[in-house]
Amino acid sequence: MTEEAHSSTHPPLPPTTEDLQFTWLRLLRSRRVGPATFYRLLSQHGSAQNALTALPKMARSAGIKGYEICPAEAVDAEMEVAKAAKARLLCFGTPEYPAALAQMKDPPPALWAIGDLDMLNRPMIAVVGARNASSLGIRMARALAHDLGAKGYKVVSGLARGVDTAAHDGSLVSGTVAVLAGGVDVIYPAENARLADQIREKGVLLSEQPMGLPPKARHFPKRNRIIAGLAQAVVVVEAAAKSGTLITARDALDMGREVLAVPGHPFDARASGCNMLIREGAQLVRNAEDVITALPTPPHVTLRSEPADTRGTSAAQSAKEVLAHLPSPPPQRRSLRETAALHQQVLARLGPSPTPEDQLLRDLAIAPRELSTVLTELELDGSVDRLPGGLLSRPVVRKDD
Image (cartoon, rainbow, N blue to C red; front, side, top):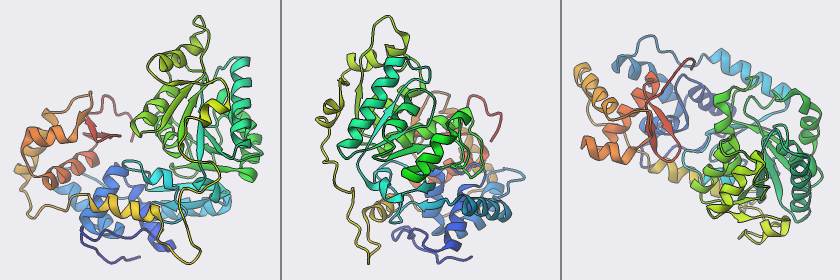
């Protein structure tokens, strides 16, 4: 499983064979390698295989003891489970990868999908909301999803109880996409198993997590970010003032997506988040027409042109652009003492509150490619968390990796 090395000015192409997909997945499943680190390693080392070879040495040079890359057997097992579940691996830059996600900053390098993959490149609208939704909220979500589907849009949600379930149910006939917090083959909550079976037949189940992984609390914000990234607009039906649904709305705003909300009674805590969004400028939604008038793209068009005889898609172009802007490796090595000192300088300027990477760059007054390597080392060590939007923070509690 070898790959040619490419310079950082000619970014590596997306994986087009099973062997190349294997190395991408193995790198991505290695400890402390998230999307931002993954793309940085590809840029620095030219290929996933080269990055896998370099990771243990990088960890040692950073003073990290006992670092091991993801075992090949674990990736083999994951791919076997995926084959049995009829899941497809969608790697960033390949024609099957959702074009809307390719526009995100640090998009998921790989996704598992089950169902009609063509649906992932149709215009989508997210319908999300409270798990403990009211009967009126359930009716509204189901009606909105049904009517938006009838107008040609695909509805995306998170397969949770309440509003999400109603949204998927209302759009089953027209097509719906369920983004899971755990593995694409692990249905949560279990009561939605029958609905998930219907989505497999008439829509798409999607996840960036490994096959067979039960969802944990820390996975849901990542799921919400994918929901926001897939959609042209996010419609919030019911949400408390502090809820995961508002994280999805915030992600959508950060990505330049439309955010709309269904108003609710001021005395109903389940509507407080929606009312707050409307007060802050979100468009009020009464029906599907209110949503459609806020959107720029007609529903009956694909998000990219994909001739049958070419692989030159917008997603592939986006992959090249993202990788091309990542920094190249530093020209010289640092001693262990210099490395430790630089690590301390970075960590001294970071806390639990997010700090922009460009601010850190200005504070330290070092070359961008030097900071890039230091951040990679600290991410591998678990000392730094990378957040969407180019933000960095120190982890508050790290009970498990």
